[in-house]
Amino acid sequence: MTDHEVVDGRDRMLRELADRLDEVPDYRPGDVAAMRELMASSMTERPAREPEVHLISGDGGAERELRVHRPPTGASAGTILHIHGGGFFMGSATLYDAVCAQLSERTGAVVCSVDYRLAPEHPYPAGLDDCAAAYRALVEDPRRFGLGPGPLGIYGESAGAALAAGVVARVGEEHPPDFLALLEPVLDDHLSTASARRFTATPIWNRGLAEWSWDIYLGDIRYSRPAEAAPAHLPDVSWFPPTLISTRDLDPLRDEGIAFARRLIGEGVPTELRHYPGTFHGVLGVAGSVVARRIFDDAVGFIRDQLESPYMLT
Image 1 (spheres, rainbow, N blue to C red):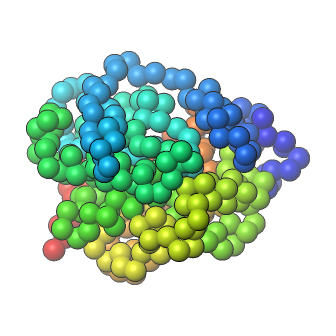
Image 2: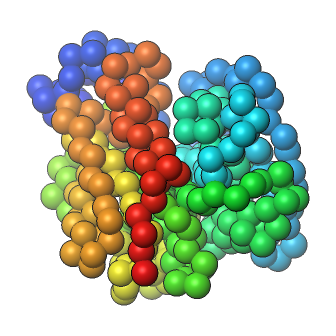
Image 3: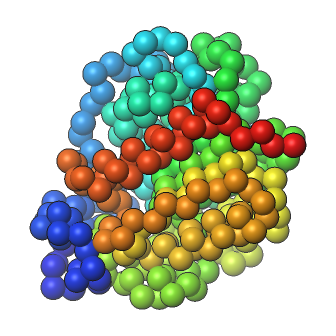
């Protein structure tokens, strides 16, 4: 679906990805409904077992689904709040059921996926409100969801990573999660880094799409928004939990992810930065890809480390 002749960085792309560019979605700004349909058509896998579905009340009384995936063994090593990607305007918890089921099976944790409201119908702060409400529900009433003792972490992909970091900012130092996994994170609405300026024609996601998604998510408050909406601008991150940041080489968001990791490290936050040469934003959706499996394996490894032997922070 992507024109191979205009792909930025194709000479640096892994061969297994370059040979499959026709399989990846070709998102183009402008038609939200068409982009949502395209994303849904590219994510048709269903899990072997359907999740439990609970309803939670978000800020303003909006009810949202929380889809709960349990490990096949029934035992749980902890809990993960999963926040899906999709540029703040695409995707759903249901589309990510197969991903969450796999994450639960591989980590041994209960994975709870929140179906947050999407822009442009519901711009900031609606989506973040829903994610924060889901986190508070897991902290305040774990028995309602059949959760046992153990660490509670947050896992977010792309725009979901922005919301995950925003939840950490929202709940503050009093109730932070035990760990945070941010995969190809959206963090900075300024888009002023070298990678954001350079990658205007990369597969799946590029600068134009990034600009457009920030515009429809923030609307008139872009550049005057609270820092929680664009976590690169948080004034203090010293109290963040142990964090994984996973970045892609040919991604306009690459440099903001690396900068955020370096900032966390500088503040003394236990941080792992995993960078994958020759990859592009959304590579986890390239089914059967060797590098996609490695990226997911590395995220699972980080989470299992946190569940089994967490950092002792004071």
